[in-house]
Image (cartoon, rainbow, N blue to C red; front, side, top):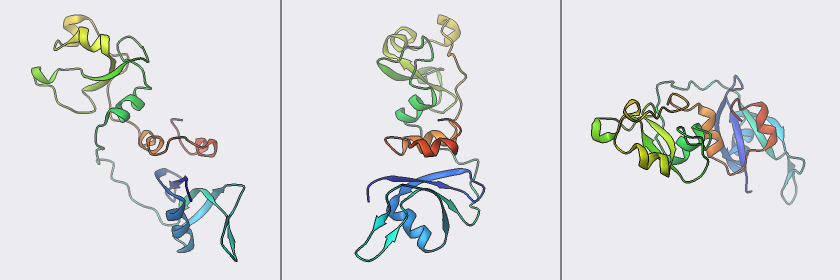
Length: 166
């Protein structure tokens, strides 16, 4: 039962990604309903079930909007579309603190951007206005969809309807 299933809230808002096994448990307990399924069903010795790709929870789950996600390199790269925020290069990516930590900058979503190694080295511990390097986009916390797409190696085409950032 390898694979991932997109879990939608009762309002069709993407919440999470789970395993096919977990999705089947939610379906059998009637805590979720099937929205999209694979062509080939799941089979046991005597039964056959639809194989879920997208499920929707029957009850609305309140998602706290103040919950901050852990900052990881993968999430920063995905938020910045795998491009250096100073020159646009997709090669040799690192993360950079816009306001360097040596100057009191924090490790927060609003202060970390994707940078290529040459730009990061050139910027060093200087502020952006001191060297004339301004990020292309203003750093911000990523959309929740970023974490959903990071949870699976490939995003099935069926999910694109439900994810805003794909």
